Length: 221
Image 1 (tube, rainbow, N blue to C red):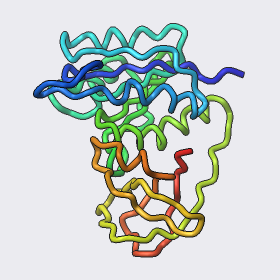
Image 2 (image 1 turned 90 degrees about the horizontal axis):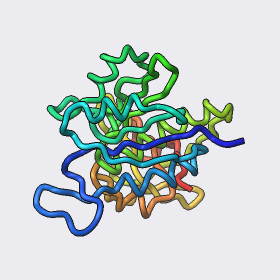
Image 3 (image 1 turned 180 degrees about the horizontal axis):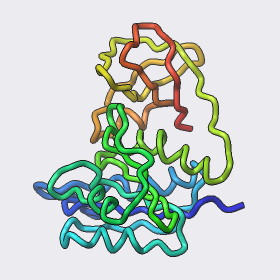
């Protein structure tokens, strides 16, 4: 049985797709990263499109072109800055909100909504590591639900290391896991994927965590 059909809209005038980025520009990391991740989570990637911030209605037009897909994943445009349009467009469209931000770090501005025609819109932060964590914590459950698959049980493993908790938020840290203990690998600022590339899992560290306490692990492979 084929999985839910997912298209990806990568927003941002600052993104470049080939060559070395100049001043004020960055390479698009999410366009290449998301299709294999979506496919691994049980979806079927149908298209990856870059949508510029200007003109302002470019994203609106793209969002409402929903034929032959079940889910649209939008990267960036999920916060409340001058060029972040997604929340306004969803409100104008009469969308039903399911998730409107999550008390986590990184990935706080992630969102999930459903258009009146039943199409799902999932918003990921524009920073690559923040988007990766949100994909595992929000997109993965959506795709599982649409296919009737149960979510895998998360192992709870003691976490070692000098880790600063985030008051009121769960931190998602890349960790290695030797079967007995998980340890952070570093390199987990919202814009950087270095830590995730070295990690076995994401550790969900609650705000009340103490050194050595077990935490849930979201396995990356």
